[in-house]
Amino acid sequence: MNEYISWMQDNWYAFGNLFSQFAFLLAGVWFARKILRTMRASQEQFGALLKLSLTDGLKEQSKPSASTDTSSPYVLADWPAAQAPPLSLPGPEPRSKRLSKAWKGAIVWLETPIGSEGPGPLRKVVRWLQTPAGN
Image 1 (cartoon, rainbow, N blue to C red):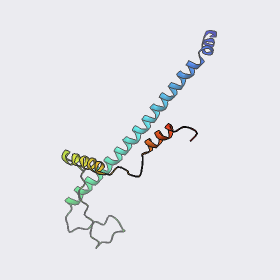
Image 2: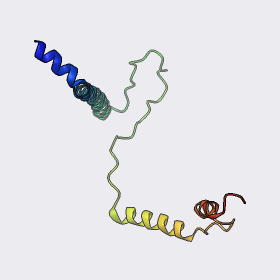
Image 3: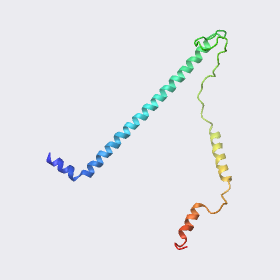
Image 4: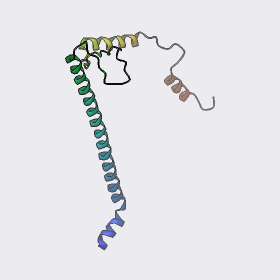
């Protein structure tokens, strides 16, 4: 037992370093688990909303058009039911459209005039460093 205590007294810096590394590792694992739980909950919520919207769309299509929905007491019986458009996820942009946006941005950047207000900040710093200290 005395050997371990003397080893810890001799190598306290290494022991503290090892302890702090384990603490950072545990904090990183805890943080990653928390982020993954949040992402999973968000995905589940989105999936539930998508499923709900799809089943509502199927219910509306199967109902006859003359019947009125009186599920809510706050809706007037004569008020027309709102027809929601079907949900769809946006598809990826075509590659040609993405490239054209990139080229447009590059051309606009190249066409902008270079500032003619005077020397740039880097040149000002270089000149300031080159001047003698007494001036």
